[in-house]
Length: 387
Image (tube, rainbow, N blue to C red; front, side, top):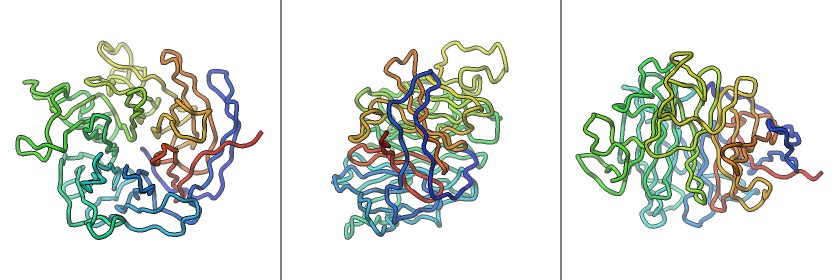
């Protein structure tokens, strides 16, 4: 995520789907306010608790998580957690950035957050517990810090936390910031920066509040590599998601100054940064060594956008024309696309709509319906437009 400056609009324009591959989406889509009576301050994540209560949890960047019933007519929300006093929200890419509910949340009440803190500047991965007295309120005093690591700059903090189908916690980390990866963190497996991490929060070992999964690619490597690393060579994988039917892990990795990219993350994979930006040499600018690197399945240049917002493969019940397609956006240009990967070797990218708001994140509810977090302080969902 980059240059997250709020811009306020009320309505959004819609366009019929067009394709960079020459095809046309058979229907037109638009984004509509999902909860018109509610507003949020810089919403950056949307989750459900997996407990069949049909509630929505929205993460606000300043350090608040709101909760409310998943109903279009809902008139009010509650503050589930307020940790503004802990969160450093001084930069566009800092703040409370991610939320993940434990797979057994219904019985243990655990959830995990990713936020930036100051003095010193660092990323914090913490566990909290819901209050025993009220399911809509978290126990703010229950924080258990799971993992911390230093952030050299105020940008490229990643932010996503999510439990995979394997029950392990995955964490997205940026390369540490500035520009051009000056500390060479992307390719340095001795640091946690510029990576997708995977840890086991149900066990503890070596004095940590987590354990290393037995099949992590660098477990007991003997070379000084961080064993938490699942994949590396990433610049700022702001948002990733799991598509359970295909067992694929999707990530949108924000580019430097020329290309934005979409990756399917595999265990042990090296995604090239800062040797490459997208499918192109970055350092050096030509003739770079691409051996062993995993190239993105899709990229786009500055003609189409400046900061990718990774999304989800659509598996919801209402938009059958989008089923199985990866829905994503660009924060800067406000475009929303559907990437058809039925043939991974030849993806087809269709533009769904042009929004009038900056899209910071996507989320799904317990029925896998898709939502868009808008920096006009609203939450949206897609709907078909009659032709």
